[in-house]
Picture 1 (cartoon, rainbow, N blue to C red):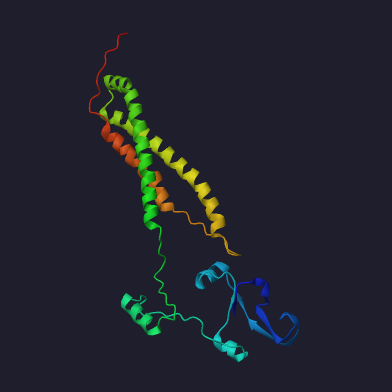
Picture 2: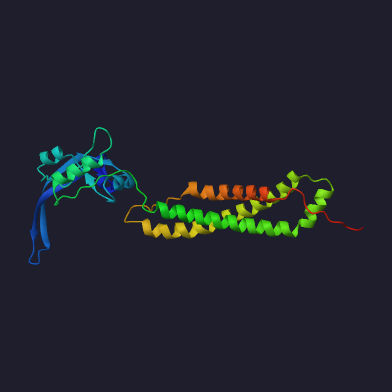
Length: 245
């Protein structure tokens, strides 16, 4: 027997009792008599594993049908799991099985996890990355416009185009990285705080899944892209200025 509550298992055994009960006038149990006690080998199963296997049910016990019949318990078929030798069920087979079962039977084919919000998440991350990129480029452009005289001075003392491009790219990289990291930190805290009570159900722990790959793509890809665009945007030769001592 598999069971989720460790309090019901002692010494690797789970005890079941049977007997008779007496109902009162209001159909409330007024008394009972235990006539049989049965000990069955039991193994405690993690509730998260149980919920995955039994469609979100947090607690329960599982026993083989032949064991239940041997103990004199009533057995009936409530659900049936079908598997294919090839590992997958084609839409044609799915339609044929559904037609054979009829309209009064609920039939579901599990094809792995399907995220219904995938497109929305992709759009959200693209918009977030675009906003960080635009803000970084605007900040870098304003900074470069204000430092034209400094760039001309650096060029006058021998700074190469590579050096001037490196300065512009480093500015864009720092601004974009700081904006992306702060944005992720600010959004991560309320996101986890809101998902915690929404996904907690009964005795099951909350489900907190952080999309690390898209977040890393925003925090790393956007700053690198901003640095690359700033590198390309630097002019070949700055306008030289004359300064009198």
